[in-house]
Image 1 (tube, rainbow, N blue to C red):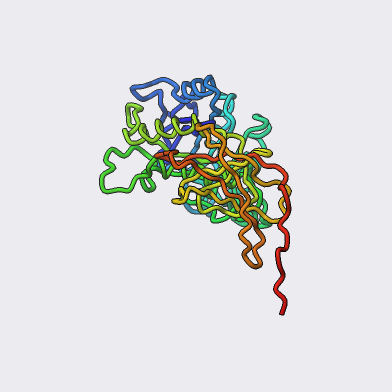
Image 2 (cartoon, rainbow, N blue to C red):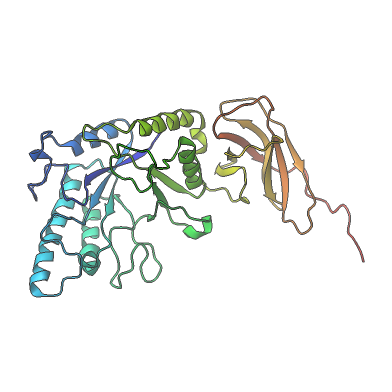
Length: 369
């Protein structure tokens, strides 16, 4: 599929641990499988050069010591402290057992009980970072003393990157304030686990996934796609199809994804820009009927498109300056001419080299009254 990292569920809201934890009997050693599947996954993906993050749900439906509300009585406080100590033990166990992991991805941290334990979570995050230097922890883990999540009451990001974009996307690059972020998306609507029957539901297509991927990358984000295997570890056939088709697309177009960043250009109605140094990419989802891919560039830009090709196609494309002359327009335009015979059943990438403009926009005439 072309992924660079994966997030593996170690424990979901039911509290069942997929590793042989010593803090609970409710774990994989009591299952017919019996083996440590977390270790198997971490080792296998690490060997392939794919980073592994571990998903961990704090919330546990089946734990008698868990509280949804903030503990009030001495009995409730003692009970919830037992749960906090248990949670700490499991998290330290995970980073000790699987030192190759790159980060922890938290869920189930929204209840008033967990929010009330802000001092505990602050110290626990410090302890985790001390024991695993460089570990990546997102903004979902903890809150401040006023209950603010993701961002503290002063507006500072809580964690290494922003995790508020679950099944939604920023409307604009400026919304992100320069923070790293990821978008986490399902294929069926809000379908996180295995769903055998997809009938009657709109399930995202490969084209939908590619659009979301490039939209994320164009705003300096990572894109995370959820897969829900069945009890035998098999994916839904629809998921297999998407993974295969995304992989084929990435083999041709990954240059516009890996290491690419936001391009400071006016948005294009044709698709999404990404950039690496002097190379600009436009992933085209909406092919123009006249085969002219028009690139808007600020008139004072020091670099403009000077040459272009299509990834996987290779032939040089004509690039021409089209100074349209709109009144009060801050932009000028460069047209990339697409070959009429070029066919693509999926989004394609125009790769452009940037260089100095041949000449600035001259004032052709001034209307005088």
